[in-house]
Image 1 (cartoon, rainbow, N blue to C red):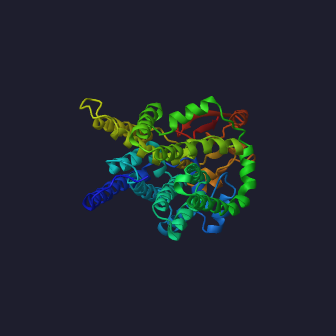
Image 2 (cartoon, one colour):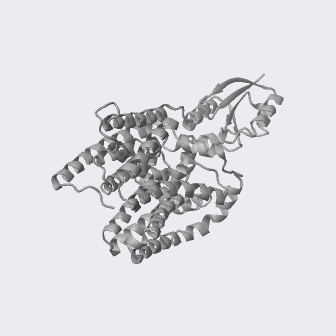
Image 3 (spheres, one colour):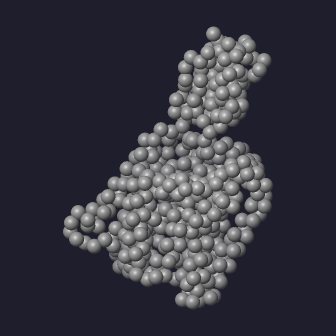
Length: 458
């Protein structure tokens, strides 16, 4: 499964261009990161990251569904070093996105890709990957380890050594402790070596399978520690997979909508069919695409958890590589259907998807907290649906002193009712209680969400 041979001078030029490309990409990410508002799941993670002691963070994560410690512990260390800000909270994701791009470049050298830098560009621009490079969540970290696990796997294919085997196992364990569904990438490796065991040798197949099994066993202590909360939380979702789940996957698989998915998947399929000559290559890269998707679906069915596209994030690396291979495998007709035009269409589709993501209206909990803080300063009483102000206190800790309690409501002139858009079931009851107490809604604040209804006494 070797790629195209390169002269030392060509390889050196590619590395220089890679450094320049990733320098530009890093600068773009660092420019955008502090300008995007935090959304709910980021805040929930950063609440723990801001704890003084690492042990408190570990306890906090054990009570989050699917929460695992490595990515958050890395964020915690960065925040301790630099001080808390949106920038420092998201910096780990930025760094890991860049490191994963280096891994994609290494994987491109294992394929007959003429333009490995184009594969890196496509990877960086894929809207799904781009999103998690900008968020204070563990998925970018997990994606990085999944990419490097595959790089280490190919290194073992070239030459087996204790050091390479250890690096492979470390990447798998680190991935599991960042996001458990990374396991489906090394599972794809195991399936491939099992199917190709005669060509690779039983000894090598046993080495890979044994390394993956031992790495999975290393995750058991955390699973046993946190499984009760995970099971209790998963049971509360009552989710199931249905036909619209397939449509969701197609719409969100690349982050660029149905059109983006069609363009990228079409190019990837062409890459598998035309760009890969050997059957074992086709099998490996097909498994790398399919197993993480099938595994995420099977895992959600088993645990009763809801399906989310981020659970399948780990296919973005093979998607980027294969769709570039597909573009390069098109016949050179010299017409509008040439590979250059196809590459331009591909890049334009990705950039359009990124622009749509960046321009999409975002919930702004910080703006809501500032609105409530200003209301509290003028003497307003604050009420919350559900009755929990933690997400707002993350930005404005003093809001805790301005809660509307049952005994303070009769003396209040103004009540600002903040409604969590993810849990608004009690909103009607809260509104009825205010109306019964003689209040009338006069305005709505923070329309992007969470919304705040301003009530004043009639």
